[in-house]
Image (cartoon, rainbow, N blue to C red):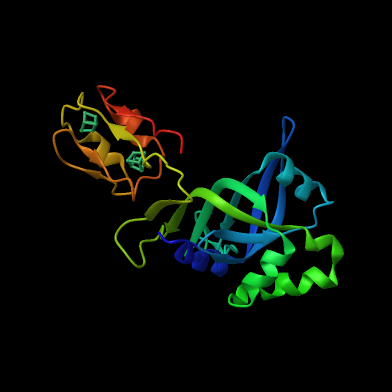
Length: 225
Ligand code: SF4
Ligand code: SF4
């Protein structure tokens, strides 16, 4: 996926939870991204705030967001109902962007205009423009009731800025004897027959049901992202 394509999905969500590290503690804040170009995805905060200081100190951030997820009600058996949604998460490296650079970029990039305007209006914000310049991430497009397709999850991983990532989903090894028990228990329709059977990384939710069902321990947990 191109950065622009990722940003379009991000814009549709709006506000994200940003998590940072301070010493041995993790912290979360609410913030939003405000533009992108070929160098990455931009956001801003006041650098005197703890969030800004942590970003400068570590250069690391992880971000997670979901489209409209208000509970629509409950079925008779108590199952909650949610609108169709997707989530995005990103893990990556950030760096500050000088105010003059933001101003210059905003001449041709309208999305950065409000950041450029804030530079003169809020001195404390002027130095707080950051770019997520190297990141990996994934989109979880969820349709648990299979309204628009015949499987519950569509999962896609991406990266930009020269970072790599492991494939998603659990892995079936050559120890597979082809009994089909994993396919029977997978409610995500993520397992295909073969020798050995195969897991579709774009559908697997890492739920682990197949690991418990396999009689010969042929299925291994997913690799850490
Ligand atoms: S349950 Fe295990 S042995 Fe059976 S098909 Fe699946 S991976 Fe292969
Ligand atoms: S981990 Fe869950 S979703 Fe993935 S293949 Fe196994 S049963 Fe299906």
